[in-house]
Every structure is written in structure tokens, then in C-alpha cells.
Length: 172
Image (cartoon, rainbow, N blue to C red):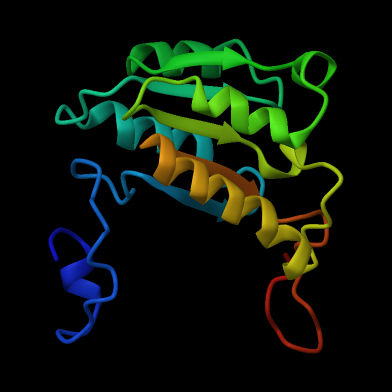
């Protein structure tokens, strides 16, 4: 085991043997990686910076934006040699989540693809119900492994991001 994982996992932990770290980033190759935090926390900017600064990444880096970000963020991606694609008409052209899988499978093997954001792509999924929210993630992970993609999913806390008074934890 190499990289950041060796510092945080117990010495006898070997269940992540298939984890292949993407350069010096915290992301895994051939896997679904999830970035989750409240809106405005810098998920998109920090992800692009981590990918763009790593000169060991030779694969194409593609940012598929389903939120309709443009302008300054598009230029920011360009500065880091990240291909930025606005997917505003995605659901008009591709009518369901299964077609997202077909889109991803058409990308070159070894590509790094950022999907922004989970809530927009899977808008019919209740992200507050684990059994519903995890199914698309398992499917994306399977696609990542079969197609040899590094998929990074941007996800954010819902509008109910206040602390739950019963548990004291953030509602997701």
C-alpha cells in the first residue's frame, strides 16, 4: 500500500490492495471517488486544482458540468488543462441514467472524469435514503472499473444541511 493510505490505515489492513492512487492526488484510478461537502465549500475548484497540478497524470481530464457553471470556472479549468464540458441539454438528448453509462463508456480508457453534481444527474433519487442514493454509485463504480476510468462525483449536502437536533450531525 502506498501514498496517503499507508499513513491513515492500520498496518494490518490490506483490503484495499486494488487501490491504485492517481498520481499524488487522493483519488483512485479505476474507481468512483466521491467529494461531498456543503454548497460553497470549494469542491469543484479544489478538485480541478488537485488534478491540474499533478504533472504525473497523463490521462485526459474531463469535467462534465451538469449544473451549468460557466464563465470564471470554465477559465479556471482551462488554466489547469482540464477539458470543461457544459451538459445543459444532457437530459433532453439522453433521457435516463442508463445513457450516462453509455456516455462514460465512450470516453478513452484511463480518462479522469469529474461529474458535477450527483443531485442534478440523479435528480429522481432521494439522496436522503441510503438504499436509493447508493444504487447509482455502485453502478458508476462498476463502470469505472470496467472502463478503466477515474470517476470523481461532486456531491453536496442538501438544503437541510443544518445540524440534526436529535443526533447533532449534519443532515445529508
